[in-house]
Length: 135
Image (cartoon, rainbow, N blue to C red):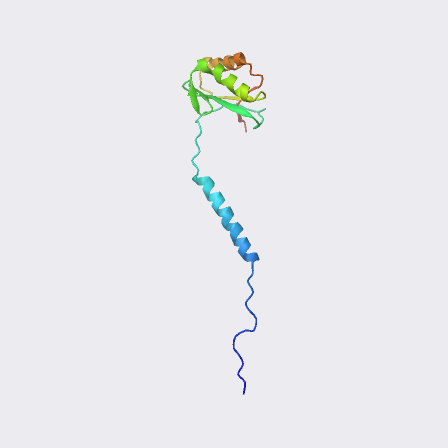
């Protein structure tokens, strides 16, 4: 009398497709969760609104004039007398650079004119003014 082996004769199959789905799900989950962990350092500026605003993000240098009249070249605060020199340095790096001027709508007009004057003296050909799109 021969007893049958109760084990299956075949080995269980390892399904790889569901495992790949789970790995992609975890990857997306961790990517999305790290986006919310990053602390974004932005300058609080209340921009004026415009109907004809356009979005252009290629090769730009951001210059910000705050409500108090402080001038920020990127993230660095500079006096109005150094705007020309910093613009010349940026133009030396890249000739076709766009200077994006963002000023608070409560900022002093003289500070904005001082920045524009410094950019013109440096030889900047492309200057854009940053606004918010009006709904």
